Image (spheres, rainbow, N blue to C red):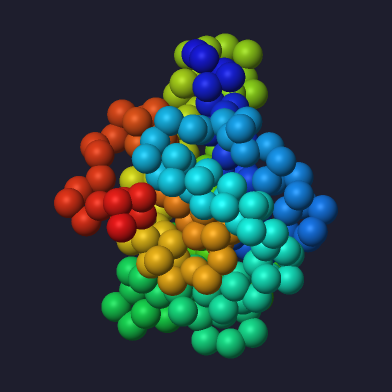
Amino acid sequence: MDRAYWENHAAAFAVLGRLHREPPSDEALASITGLLDEWPLPGTPGAAAGLDRLRRSRDAGEDAAAVRADHDRLYGVSAVALVAPYESVHRGQDRLVFDTATLQVRESYRAIGLQAPRLNLEPDDHIGLEFDFVAQAVLRAIGSPDDAVAEAALEPARAFLVEHLLPWAPAMLVRAATTARTDFMAGIALLSSGALDSARAAFGLPAEDATGSAADR
């Protein structure tokens, strides 16, 4: 097992999960844009497009206040979301939060000893939490010193991608990238699309269908 390879996936998914949930402070923003050349999953069109938008954000001087306002506008922190960040809204028949998908995601978390940080107050199926689940599942797998055990322990991450993230997140990220007003938020959506494509390849999953990725829009 190439542990560094999987650590790169865990690191990317953890960072993206955090940024989908909470916009960065000015200090965190400077740190992120100062480390773009070290992004751990650079090898996809989504990653290339996302890194380009983040460099534009840095060069344009977008600050944390602008990013926070755009994050709020997109994900509906204080008003109606332009791009709902919850799986249940995109996949449920009634397009409601805390629907069937939310409870299924909760069970996936519980199966590897995780719990949403704001259980019953915030839906478990926020895109940021789902990205973080993949990160945590991969880290738990590669924590085993035995390669065969570690390989087998990657199954929860693979299954979660197939059953949850991949059916809805690519289209949601396309919309987020094209709806964002800041280059930063567009860049995060594009990087996220790229990370999902990297994970597809890592797990040997089929390439995205004709709906396309955010980098193509």
